Amino acid sequence: MSFILLVLLTLLPAVFGQSWQQYLDGLVQALNTDGLTTLASASAALNSSSEGQLVAQSLSAGNWTLFAPNNQAFSSAPINLTSDPTSVRNLLSYHVVHGNFTDQTSSYPKITLGRTLLNDSSLVRLEGNESQVLAWSKGGKGIFVLNNGTIVPVVNKTVYQNLQVLVIGSVLEIPQNLSDTLANSTYDITTLAGALSSINVSTDNSTTLLNVLNNARGITLFAPNNSAIATANCIGGLLPNTTALIALFGNHVINGTTVYSPAFTGGNNYTSASGEPFAFKTNSSGVYVSSAGSNWAHIMRSDILTSNGVVHVIDSVLLDTKVNASAANSAYQSATSLAASMTTETGPVGVAPTTSVGH
Ligand SMILES: *[C@@H]1O[C@H](CO)[C@@H](O)[C@H](O)[C@H]1NC(C)=O
Ligand SMILES: *[C@@H]1O[C@H](CO)[C@@H](O)[C@H](O)[C@H]1NC(C)=O
Ligand SMILES: *[C@@H]1O[C@H](CO)[C@@H](O)[C@H](O)[C@H]1NC(C)=O
Ligand SMILES: *[C@@H]1O[C@H](CO)[C@@H](O)[C@H](O)[C@H]1NC(C)=O
Ligand SMILES: *[C@@H]1O[C@H](CO)[C@@H](O)[C@H](O)[C@H]1NC(C)=O
Ligand SMILES: *[C@@H]1O[C@H](CO)[C@@H](O)[C@H](O)[C@H]1NC(C)=O
Ligand SMILES: *[C@@H]1O[C@H](CO)[C@@H](O)[C@H](O)[C@H]1NC(C)=O
Ligand SMILES: *[C@@H]1O[C@H](CO)[C@@H](O)[C@H](O)[C@H]1NC(C)=O
Ligand SMILES: *[C@@H]1O[C@H](CO)[C@@H](O)[C@H](O)[C@H]1NC(C)=O
Ligand SMILES: *[C@@H]1O[C@H](CO)[C@@H](O)[C@H](O)[C@H]1NC(C)=O
Ligand SMILES: *[C@@H]1O[C@H](CO)[C@@H](O)[C@H](O)[C@H]1NC(C)=O
Ligand SMILES: CC(=O)N[C@H]1CO[C@H](CO)[C@@H](O)[C@@H]1O
View 1 (cartoon, rainbow, N blue to C red):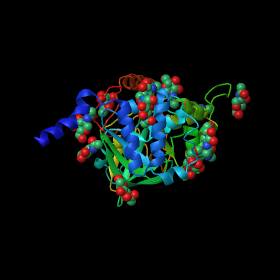
View 2 (view 1 turned 30 degrees about the horizontal axis):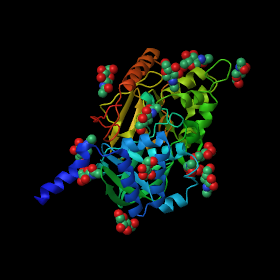
View 3 (view 1 turned 90 degrees about the vertical axis):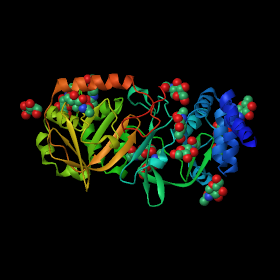
View 4 (view 1 turned 180 degrees about the horizontal axis):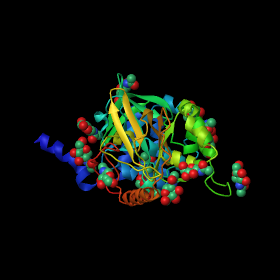
């Protein structure tokens, strides 16, 4: 009898619909109990704006994973949690991932990605208005988040209702735009940033290739690192020929599709912005990419997230200056129509098949 009563009591909120306010109150209480008091105050602040309330509403149904910064994390982050409800909403949204699947995380260098709640159009410009993703992996000491070029280990774990809570010791950075990402020296791709900003794509010299990539919605960039650019003889030879340079760098880009590393498998064929097919191969030393049978470049570092896509660092320039304009155009068109029909993943991003919860 008492067991049945217990089951009934457990099911009651599900049957009669626990309000999101009750859910949020309970969450704030649970976070406080776990000593995550700053995060608790930030979560309580969701209640003070309609946009924050939408986040609380979303959280109250379905399965979620919360990457929960501890008090120490907040104390060393330059954040004023009472200054602006939009910033608080965005910051919390980036710490919440759809689904409950971190126990399926593969070991580094494999990377797992999940779709967060962050969709503010001033911070995220992915294809199909998709929300930003979060990237993590697993090492000897467990799961760690890959964020802004650093590793943020999960230090504790707890559960609140439908929420897996993974405690972390840093507040996560929301991915920046592409040009700021390239310019930050952590990634060893600053020379590429210079090269892309020196290539004019308009006759009046007002728009550079870097501008075009920065303004794209949904872009994948295979970024040759500094020594790759320095040793690529071809670039010197092509230098006066802007058309050839645009073709070359266009063969390092997927236009309209953000492709994360889990999709780098032999069976997947993506077309470059210049219209050439990419190929991928994996062996014991790592994952490699080529453009239409060019040299194979080793992917040195994958899944550097930007506000409008993703960057993967490679160790050599893909030596391909061919162009197939109609293939490029049709790839972009199909990327656009695919993006329009995309649903929000509740499992690992970039791994087929994905489950969906509608858009
Ligand atoms: C949110 O606001 C409602 C009504 O103003 C209040 O009842 C509730 O306790 C608040 N919840 C939190 C977590 O502050
Ligand atoms: C982990 O969290 C639990 C509460 O959920 C707490 O009792 C414990 O002290 C925490 N451990 C560490 C190392 O923070
Ligand atoms: C962002 O997500 C919220 C749910 O958290 C939703 O209500 C809102 O419409 C979304 N905004 C955009 C621009 O997609
Ligand atoms: C939540 O996850 C459980 C498994 O942990 C699954 O059975 C259930 O369908 C999921 N619910 C939703 C709404 O995704
Ligand atoms: C945070 O911002 C609020 C509102 O702008 C301000 O009143 C408060 O003094 C700020 N707190 C800190 C620690 O800067
Ligand atoms: C991201 O990392 C770079 C390089 O380490 C650093 O300069 C920058 O301050 C970090 N971003 C933020 C928002 O802290
Ligand atoms: C998440 O999934 C695991 C099993 O994979 C389950 O044990 C756990 O209860 C789930 N957590 C939530 C909050 O649904
Ligand atoms: C564009 O830049 C090139 C190379 O710097 C220069 O030769 C050309 O005159 C410029 N065109 C215009 C319209 O400014
Ligand atoms: C510039 O490169 C393009 C494409 O590779 C080529 O068709 C064209 O002949 C080159 N122009 C010059 C002046 O070398
Ligand atoms: C690969 O390309 C071919 C021909 O363009 C297409 O028919 C096929 O569906 C593509 N495969 C995948 C996995 O996208
Ligand atoms: C992507 O394709 C669109 C439509 O063809 C085009 O306007 C845009 O310049 C392309 N972007 C890149 C980076 O090639
Ligand atoms: C050189 C450069 O662009 N650095 C940027 C690194 O990232 C921070 C923000 O995360 C920017 O403020 C810097 O300008």
